[in-house]
Length: 499
Ligand code: CO
Image 1 (cartoon, rainbow, N blue to C red):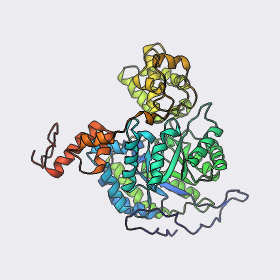
Image 2 (cartoon, rainbow, N blue to C red):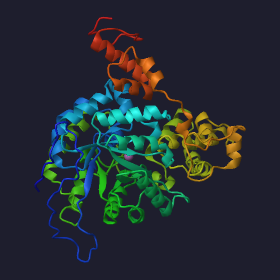
Image 3 (cartoon, helix red, strand yellow):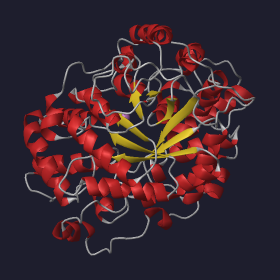
Image 4 (cartoon, protein in one colour):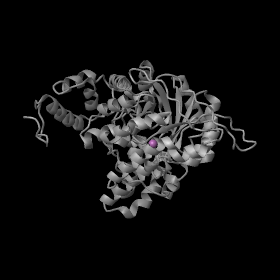
């Protein structure tokens, strides 16, 4: 199948409407099928979610750059290549500048939209930041080349996405707001559909159903997409993980019900805890009413490249093959399951795993049914483990749980248990406003602190996200570039600069 290249601009940014392709022949469409002919988009997650899910975000920028041009030729809807844990990892483990990665990929990907994942007011860090940091961060990431920004909040409290969303719109980016999918008595189709409506009112350009645990069944995908499409006239994108073996089926049913785009990973990085394979979905839909229009031939060099990377990093690859039935049983994300496992192992309490897994739903109910995704998965998991290991429920309450019960993470989907809240907060009044409102402007202070070793305005933001890790990384970088040591704790290893 011929791909028509999109026009590229001088800046390499694409902001135009979707490229038009000739509709494929639906020769083999099943008779009586009510599905209308539509072109389905694919977002390739090989550089971000798949990379994060199966190899702990250890790919280097130099591993990615040689294949960018080929990826750009495929005709993907977008490439997810930034955000999530990649930002932290680049500095912490790879001694690499995440902003530099973004710019280098942008230089090579001229036609396809670049996409990223942003954790609302948490940005790419692990706490809420002041509004001025959020705005500056969004400004810089779009300025450096991001087209589509997927924003989510762990509690689905849209107030936590408000500032970032507003700034994405101001910068002319594509705003995608994501529903953190979960299963609970309060997470009804009505609730999710209303959320989608609220997202549209916030100016969302598209809606994502973000199923981080892989719990979305084909039946649920179908009804959820339908419920959302009835309320909003926006593109819907499906995001799931293959952990339970449901994702590809859920995609097909969701797409038939009206979803427009789905997240897939090139085959060597697919399945297990990652996404369904790009090639599989392309082949599954080919010549039907929902064709992607992508050609397997153009995906082949991409797959070969990732296969090489998989071999190169075979010691890191941690893709779970097969189906993890525990996820279906306990309805918790794979990452949370393995975290609990290793936490208990460290404390010589692995035999309590089943008790902890059974405690998770109780704690979750008492905490107002938060979806389990970073950071709520850790918060609920830690409390559940405490309750079991201490031998008395809610006797020990970690700081994060207390903060959560004081409203600092946002509004919970259902009210929290008042007795537990009272006990945890020790008489302190929980906040009910948008948590970001409570944080004073931070940019001036950060700029001042980082002034002696910043080489680019983005460095202050790296420092804001991860003060210790970034400071060490940036001082090294400063020393390398300027040959001046501004207070490194230890000299950099290669010794290629005088200190
Ligand atoms: Co994901």
